[in-house]
Amino acid sequence: MSNRHAVAVIGGATAGAEVASRLAKSGAFVVVFDMNARPYGKIEDGLPRWHSALRKKEYENIKGKLDHPDILYVPSTKIGRDVSFEELTSRWGFTAVVLACGAWRDRPLQIEGADNYVGKGLIYQNPFVIAFNRSHYEKGVTPYEMRDDAIVVGGGLASIDVAKILMLETVVARLATRGVHVDIEELEHTGIPATLAQLGLTFEQLDLKGCTLFYRRRPDDMPLMEAPEGADAARLEKVQKSRRKILEKAMEKFAFKFEPLSVPEKLIVENGQLVGLGFSRVKVEGKKLVPTGETYERRGSYVISSIGSIPEAMPGVKMNGELFPFSDWDLGRIDAFPNVFSAGNVVTGKGNIIASRRHAEHVAEALVERFLGLGSDGHAGEEQMFQGVVKTAELKAEAIGQAVARLPKADAATVEQLRLRAEARKAEVGAVGTLIAWLDKVTPSRFT
Image (cartoon, rainbow, N blue to C red; front, side):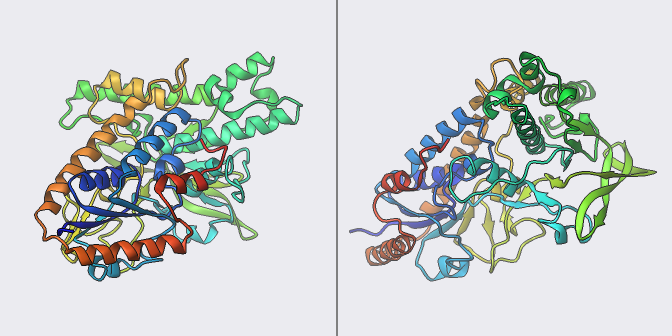
């Protein structure tokens, strides 16, 4: 066997699968490590399960990319825990290592001592959504208790998803006490007021307060769609108007409340439990937030923080704040590890799946509304919103492939040792056989 490149890809979802596929097609031997049993990343664990058509499409796309004779998939293996990063980059013998492990860490709620109350009144978005999705189809996964009158801190698309989960679940539960059983995905499609009207009810009759989304800026500033770089005042106003419109439609269809210009600054704790937050009221002057001097307290059933996702720190790599210390942002290079490249959200430092920067305002507004299920046809056509993510992954994979091609190749003996070592790790986690056979084994029947 001739010499060839041997590459480790950390993370098997959209970005990782694209890189692995591109490298394998060019003749490289690729080992894909994923911390989960299934390689679907935020498609499975970040998109709420009502995005069923988009989720299924991307599952098949990822599976198709990884199902290649020169790609070895090693599941349930977290680099930095099960295999050290230093060992992978310098001792296994890989030509290159590609970080495509996404952004799974919730940005901490910026109040001193807040994390002392995780599980004691404070919940973070990522585990909340993961439990909501997986409890539907995976044994042993218990969802969080869905409580009325929750406080949600956020402002982006993900925080609206959190508010939707809370509202849909609490309405379903309250209807069940009346002997009325409603499917949550049907409720999401139809909307809460419309469904209740069909049942001869109003939201007020359910005696629910509903959750409240607290945001530090105005509705105009919500990162629901991006303003083009260099946008003039007229164009910026169009974007801001679209943001307001999207929020209003979401509030109307899913019955949650919204409190703008509110910065959380204080914990309200009783008997060891977080029972609310103290907020500082602010105003926007240019791009700055300026305190008005007004403060207020808000109590709730619990607090869910949804203020963004960032990459998890990698043991052995000195981070630069929230991000990896990239010296080349295009290829995700790190000076201390010259054979390392990076792709996807681990580079951007964002955990959001959807990007709409390249769309015109009216197109972006329509796509975001489809993503949030605000139209009469639900989520039909929302996959168009994901095309930008896929295109970015393709371009990044091509650039990384070209850079890897310039590196020295591994000899046949080294590649064989790598293969045997990776197969041994697969065996440790019980993943014998092909990728397809493994996924058939670990995919529950109700998986969506």
